[in-house]
Image (cartoon, rainbow, N blue to C red; front, side, top):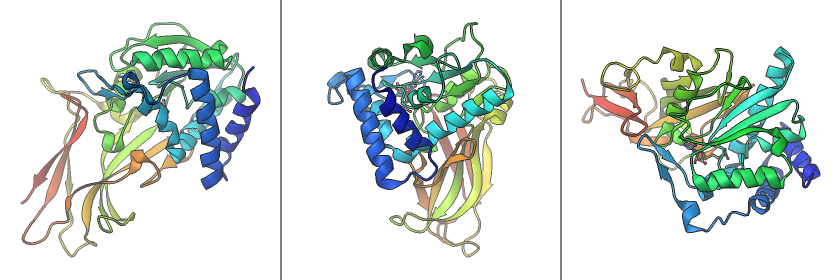
Length: 328
Ligand SMILES: C[S@@+](CC[C@H](N)C(=O)[O-])C[C@H]1O[C@@H](n2cnc3c(N)ncnc32)[C@H](O)[C@@H]1O
């Protein structure tokens, strides 16, 4: 099997809790080179840059999806969390573990390392991708790496509307189709659509994404001074409780009071995104492009008061955490 040993070495480094800095960066460079050669995609191509606008959110272009690999800790923690999810499923029952991977990008980056730890009899994957270039590329990648035996099916579809057909039951639903604050991309509609079709014990990876309101040290300092608590959580419980009211797909509005000036250290107000991938693999503030805080305003003063903020996660016309500022 071409690159089998290289992939095994890469996996060992990615799954090692001690891996940091240069070693992680060099290992992912090597992994990217293998994937580039296998897929033959042109990262500079015009078509490869094109995003797909589904009408309910954005699916990023082939080049951008490929380059997600360079978000070092994201890639490491997602691969490690997915590995933990497979191990935990195998501990529960016999038989192959089946992953539904929604949004593989051109390389199925988060899945391939696991092929050096589990055989094709132990691990199965169904690959979903909406972008035509990425869809063609992911098939070439599996084929060129001699890993097609792992694949139940390749499906080109919108994962936010896809209807899962019968076949091998799914154990893990994996999707990383998000940006910080769950803006624009389709993590939430994809998770909603797929998880409601799957059994209750199916593991969702990432298992929880929390957006909270916080205060930063200042506009430039990479430091969160205080966290006022979650304003939107995406996990199996919120998906199960989701019940849109007539005429709107919005999640319920959540009002978070903002402490009075002087009651807490002041600085820019920001939305903070944290990700619990699985099995203790987490991503917190500034560790990834997905968890960079987004400044939304200045801390209120007596001249510029703010009592609370109403947060509503909307799905239409595009995924977004809507905010309404309440002054009294
Ligand atoms: C952020 S990239 C991640 C790529 C790769 N899974 C990784 O983690 O490195 C997200 C991928 O999901 C695909 N995608 C986004 N929305 C989708 C949807 N609604 N249905 C199917 N694929 C989607 C995009 O085209 C893109 O290839």
